[in-house]
Each structure stands twice: as C-alpha cells, then as structure tokens.
Image (cartoon, rainbow, N blue to C red; front, side, top):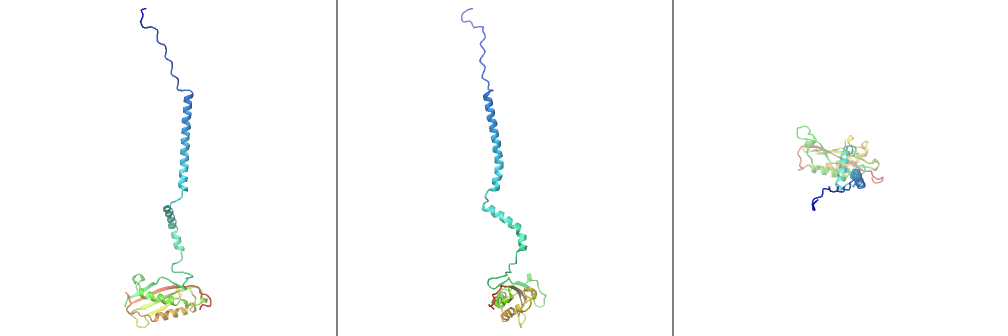
Amino acid sequence: MADGAPSSRPPADPKPLPSRGGVGASVGFSSLARLQVAVVVLLGVLLVAAPLYLWRRPRSGAEAATADASLSEGDGQSSAFGAPPDDFDASPPSGVRLSEPRVLECRDQGSRKRPSEQCGSLPVFTKTFADAIVAAKDCMSSSAGPGSITYVADVSFSRRRAPVTVSLPKDGRSYKGQKPVASCAAAVRAAMSGVSLEGMPHDHVRYKLAIVATYAPREAGSD
C-alpha cells in the first residue's frame, strides 16, 4: 500500500455521554416535591389566618360608629315604646316642671270648634299662663306627695266678663279628690284673673289650651 493512503479501519466508537438519571435525578425530584408541599402548606395557613385576622382585628372609629348606629336602629322600636314621655318627671329639681303647652281647640264667631292642628298658637298668653303656674309652685302641701295637674285655660277675645277662666279636669291629674289641688287652683286662677287680652295677637276668637304641671315631693314642715 502506498504511503499516505487513507486507512480502511473504521474509527473507534465515541465514549457514551454520562446518563442524567441515577442519584442526581432522585435528588432533584425530592427537592421539587418538598417545595410543592411547602407551597400547599403555606396556602393553607393563609386561607385560615386571613379570615381570623379580619374577624379579630380592631375596628376603626368609623366602623365602630356604623355598627353602633345599626344596633341603635334595631332597638329603636322597643326603646320608643318603653321610654317615658318627655314631659314627665317624678322629681323635678325646681319643685314643678311644665310640659309643652297644647292648644286643644279654637273657635271663630258663630262657627264650630276647629281641630287643634288648625288653631295656631298664643305665644304671649302661653308664657303668662306658664309663669303663673310656676309662681304658684309651693301651693302643693307636703302631705300630697309627688304628682301632676293639668291646667286648662279657656281664653275668649269676645267675652267681656272673665275673658280667661282656668279649670283643673279630674281626668287630667294624678291626685285624688279636690282637697290636694284646691290651693293650687286658687293660686293660678287668682294670677290669671287680672290678665288683659287687649292688643294680644290672635287668629281666632276663642282658644282652649292645656299645660301639665308635675310636682316634686316636698319636705314636711315646708308648707
């Protein structure tokens, strides 16, 4: 064979590449599994902890006020029926407490009485009437105890004689009998007997209005 001719012997087989299996693959799979388990556990903790935090976290001032308002609205109906009237006080500190004056009825010349909502008011006369009741606050004897009296004023701008009369209806007072209220009736009537209606603003000829006076208990010997 001539020098330099190519060799007819086939080349040797290349060395095989190292396999990716074995110990390295086992280690990689185990790490991935542990990572997946850790992620699942973390998600489970978040799902449980988040609602607990939202439930137990402190409320802000606005949230607390909203919640309190909702509770108040829910109890409003029972509170309204169970609360005492605003114009009643079993023991007023000043000796006597007056309700808001109420116009019971009014009339015009030659007409029937009108309902109270059509009557308007008599502010000047009402103040005079209330002042007379307060001025006579010591009229109730100590033996009578606490209670209430309704004073009704009949005001007539067309009646020349006794334009103002005062009555104390039995169904408008808590005291039984006439004796406990006699001195109060006399005192208030005396004060109102001299009241002049001349020039007093009014929309109707005749009015009836009422004021409830609540008396506190008085100490014995203070009469």
